Length: 538
Ligand code: NOJ
Image 1 (cartoon, helix red, strand yellow):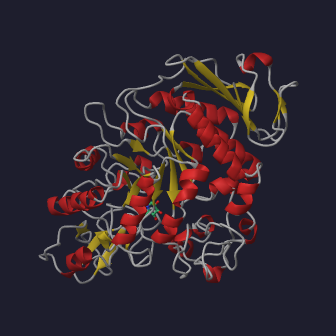
Image 2 (cartoon, protein in one colour; image 1 turned 120 degrees about the horizontal axis):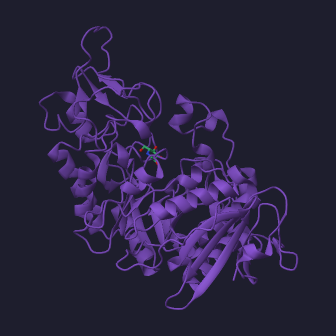
Image 3 (cartoon, helix red, strand yellow; image 1 turned 90 degrees about the vertical axis):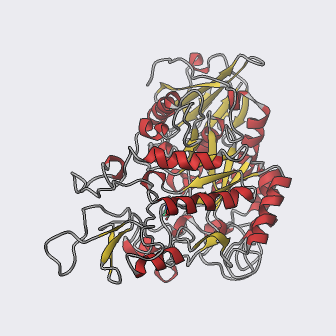
């Protein structure tokens, strides 16, 4: 339990469009299929934009990669930074998507993957041919370690995120190439000016087409020690890496990205950072007011924090305080890389989590399907798609990437006219958008209501926040503002599996329920908050 602490700063000048926005992640392969090949595409996504604008009414979309790619990591292995993969459509389809989104008042954040390319990218194919090729120095190449030569030994002890050495031997060049991720994703060398310039030009390509921001993949990997020194601890966590991730040089790379983005009015830079970074290390990637870097280094704290009142209060409070006053906090509870929210917390927990996520002071990232309460789908071995699963059984991400169920149309709940690339799953097939729109108690109705509440109560956007844990298992958020009109809301979340009676003084004088996470979640007369439930009080 925490003592009453002062509220964080509220309301700021000069913020970007993304400050306090609700951003919905579209994983395009699984969102909507227009051409009946079983894989979602841009025209499919465009046809569903009114759902995002009118039913949910989010502010923005983060579009996961649609670049040309062999799809060995489903688009995070790019072979052309300026083309759309035919599986998703073409540039005209992309322009239609952005145009329609803008017409509906939705902003678009484009995923951008500058740490690595596919090994089938023409830059890499050329780079691998010889040490004097045009692109010879565009990737991180190194000679084998001296000594034992058969087989050649990697130049240092750096390891890949997916396990094993981060070095792959390329016999054509008789050198190793670095792959911080999967072996077919060689790392670009962004300290090499032509490579860096090509990446900047790729950013401009999409900014010129009107995207409102870029979400940069694996930002903390973008700078490496030029001397390729060994990590002192060979079992290092990436958050503690001293050389594989070069923290001194990273700001320079991010500054380069920032400079490109500021060539355009009103665009934002979001960065995927290592979830193990501390709060201080994460917020340091905002830069400073004079030298801003990322508008939003993703805060994955809620994904790591146990869903208990004390842990949540401690995280929210510490994070909110750590974000510099000129910047804006962000929160997320799901994405295409982690088990689904409703599988981690159960349906009731996921409902309270939605209340928390959408009433806290933050830009909020939602993962497609979480608003429907979708759960992980068991994928039989013969249908496994994700290369992670083959490398480390159980670590695959297919389960949380199943297609969205739109309605009851066979064979894939309105997602596609054919068998989809991953099964929709029996339980998720009943959680369709159409059914949930008709049910006032559905997860979708809760999200729509929360988004409406967020819009109609500016205190949820601008208000200062205090997060605490005034009694066991009770998380309390206090949102409050004095200007332009005094307003104050209290959000209570019971994280226990049993009902709890809230002490009268803990309500801070707030007695009128505005929204509950579920039917009968809050009994006003007895001040009883049901197990795993949440309420917003005025
Ligand atoms: C992070 C992305 O979110 C993940 O899906 C991808 O596999 C890796 N980066 C590699 O690009």
